Every structure is written in structure tokens, then in C-alpha cells.
Length: 508
Image (cartoon, rainbow, N blue to C red; front, side, top):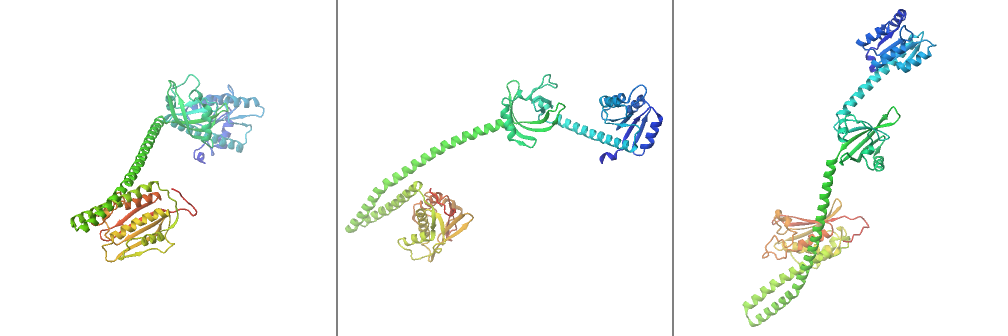
């Protein structure tokens, strides 16, 4: 044991020299023995030296052992005290317990083995008391030096102790003249007790929200951790409450919550305004496109008639002008048709189901007019390229991709257009690859914008709507699209469709 390292110091008081000699002879090897023949001599020795255990005979001239041990208790309370007495000295034992606070008494004549055991037990008590006192002193230092308020409160809510930070927080003096209770600072105790119960972990209550109402009308938001530390002399449970002032943090949280609320409200208003503007823009675009289509068709018909009349008259200039008008109007009609289709896509309802993309692409190829003779098509086998999609929308997207691929491979002697299918995690991916003119890799992000063209109209016709429509269709499918390519080395367009659980059906 740790205490065995230190030699036990014993002071034995007896007015008979023979008893002192016998005691010294019996225990000088086991203990560091000191003796005194009178209370005055014993007290004088204790003034200059330290004893772990003090033993006194009860019957001595001038004073009793109980009275002497009482004096030792008042001046050296950590010293453990033993009384030697006869069987008939019951009153002496009572006095020794009440006055001297003895650890034990030993009857005369004493047995050496029994007395040795009693001394060792007494030293064990002394060692534990000293250890307790050291721990208490360390705790007191931590208690007082802590920057956070700490209070000791009993189970009735009375503050039994508080450190300097707590006295400062609660506006209490160094030594409060009146009793301080928790209810002075808390308005709704039942609510606090419910929150404590919810935060209980064994005998501790961790991070309980608490608002303290301080003198002068101030309030402090706190996080409190409460731990059971023992009982006091009155039998009441004592709790240590560590208080963390979070008023600044709470105020910052409230400020951020208000900012977030204001931001959410403004975003909601702006989003509503944007959606209304988009709806108006869509309606306007549809109305304009729809109203333009009829007069453009009339112009086209009249340009054809004008060209025929010019041919009959042999007026070549008039015939050329009518052809230019016819060509320009045809391009406008294509643009109007694309705009109408693009506008309708926002309001179109999609029904998703397993769809064979190879079969849909085969249909698109069969409907090409005129059928390109220079192109070789490579498609997956039917039934192997399944995606969860709206069939009609998928056909529109593939038609646009196919038209682009055919258009941009018409300068190739041997053109090849290939469609593939694969899986990427939880997604199905389709791609369409060609060996046409391609595009600059740095411009791939422009491909899917409305009216974005990477090639001049004089070289390749088009309205700049096709790939924007593909992008819109993929968004309706909650998917994505992107492109890869190089100049004169072809292009590859990817469509990613989120996979769907078996038996699941989504309406959008």
C-alpha cells in the first residue's frame, strides 16, 4: 500500500514509566515511537513534531485521557486518537468519544497484536483523511479559479456555496447576508425540472437550457450541467451546478434565425415573381409563335406562287427573289415550330415507365426524310437499352440528337452514328456518337443553350433550339445531359436517367 512507504509516527502518553518502556519495547521496530509522561510534555512535543496516531491512558493525575485527546482534536484535528482504559471506565469511553473524538479505545491490559492492528487501522484513517483533504483543497482551488460560475445547491434549491464567477453573475456579495435560493432567479421551476428530466444521464443533468432573471431586470441565457456530489450534515442531497453563459451565442443564433427567415421570405417572393415571369414569358412565346405561324405559311405559299408565275413569264430575277423569300420563310416556320415545341414542354405531363431506347431510335431512323444513304447506324439489340422515361418525350429528344448527327456527318464519305447504353451507379446512361465535324471542347457548355450555335448557318442550317429542348426534356426526367467532342473528330452526347425501383411509376 502507498501508506506503507511512510513510517507510522505514534505518540504514547502515560504517567507510568513502566508502561511507556513496555510500549516502546513492543512497537519500536514496527513504528516510529515517541512517549510522554505528562499531557504538558505531549503537547509540547506535538507543537514541534507531527504524529499520525496519538494514544493516551485515561487515568492520569491532573487531567484525564479524554480531556487531553479533546485538546489534541481541537489543535491537530487530522491526528487519529486512541484511548487506553479499563473495563469499568465506561464513562471515560463516552467522554473520549464525545470530547476527544477518538477513533477507538483499547482495554487494559492491552494485547500487542490487537494494539498493533488498531494503530495500523488508525494510520489508514489518517492517510485517507489526508488524501481527502488534499483532494478537497484541489477541488476548492479549481472551484474558485474557474472562469465559469459554479454553485453548490441542495435538493430544496438553497445555494450552499458559490465561486467568485457565480457571485459576480448572480450579483451576490462575498458573504451573502441572506439565504439565496434558486427560485429567486427562475420563473417557471416546473418547466426547468421537466427539461432537467429530459437531459438526465445517471446522476447528472447535462446541458439544460436555463434563463436566469437577475436583479435589475436583466436576464442571462445559460447551459447548466448538474451533478450529484453527496449529502450534507442535514441529510440533504448536494448538487454541483456548472453554468455556461450563452447569452451572446443565443443572441447571435436569434439574429441568424431572423436573417434566415428574412432571406427565405425574400427568396420565396422572388421565386414567385420569377415563376410568374416565366409563365408570362412562356405564354407570350407560345402566343407569338402561334400567331406568327399562320402569316408565315401564307407568305411561303405566296412565294411559291410568285416563283411559279415568274417562271412562266421567264423573269429570272423575280424567280430568284421568290426562292430567297421561300427559303427564309421556311427557316422562320421551322424556328416557330421549335419554339412552340420548346414552350409546350414546360406544361407537358410526363408518365415514366421502362422504355426501350433502341426501339425508339429505330423508329426515328425509319422516319428520316430523306433517308441518308451515306450513314451507317449501330444500335443496341432491342430490349437491352431500357431506361425509365416518358416514351413520347424520349422520342423527341432522340429525334433531335439524330437530326444533328445526320446533319453534322453529311460531309463525311463514310458516316457512322452509334447509340450505346450503360449503367453508372444508380443511373442509366444513353449516348449517341458520330464521326462528323465535332466542335471545340471548350465550347461544350454552350451546346444546350437556347439559340446557341457553334457552326455558321451558311454551313449547317438550324434554329439553335434542338439541344435546348433535349436539356429541357432531361430536366423533366430529373436527369442530366452533356457532350464531348473534338473538331473534325465527331461528337458524343450523353443522357443520364435516374434509375427507378421495380414496380415504381412517377408522374411529373
